Image (cartoon, rainbow, N blue to C red; front, side):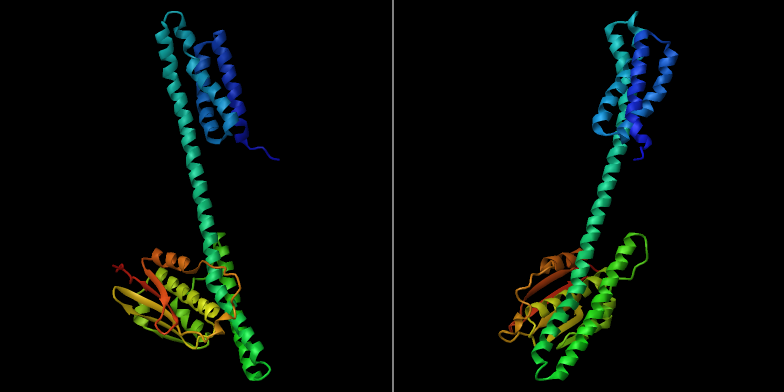
Length: 329
């Protein structure tokens, strides 16, 4: 094990302090003891900055005592107790100042380390959400298509082949999502990364969704900021994933991006699933953050999110985002 120089700060301060106290006790010339202060004060700051609390506290007490007591012999004979205490208090000020400086630097380092730790945790949560938002969508599609192919393989092999083709497409998309996550990890290490997809990629997502239709106003999409654009894409993918999970038999799914009062509206609405058709994925544990996570994302970019049943028995998710330079409400 390699010992760092900072490991010797506390022992060095303790030894220097004991030598200074011994010199003060035997009456060494004041020039020697004053020169020792040039060593003790930096050591006090270094110990407060780097040393462990237990060993650093003991060495610090010795160091402060050595600095405060060195002028005592000079005023002991002719001065009063008040003058002795005043001299000690006067020299205790720079000693405590050195300790305070080192403690301040130690606190700043602790704050910086906590900030880095919090940033890493936030990045890990972001990556977890990315995996859920993007990969879960494609994996859900694979499961639905595989289950559908199993049911129709015997009576309609052609439908089964088409389902297998859709499974292949969804699998390739899932691999692309994993690649984006790997690129994000590389970015955290200083490497290049690919941009997070936005609404420009939404047509290909809806195209892979059986029964899905998309109506998007290009002008409305261009009015979104980059953050709102990527968030809207995540909302759409999550909403479509939930349709596959909870309403797999829905005959129609409508995705729309249009201008709304005060911003741009994204809506994902599905028709009611036939009775008994929505249970293909039931019983499986949900791994995502659900509507609460979506709402937090949307509100982070200044938007609003609502979700609820449609009058026709389906479900509708609606998010309204501010346009660039025009916050909502």
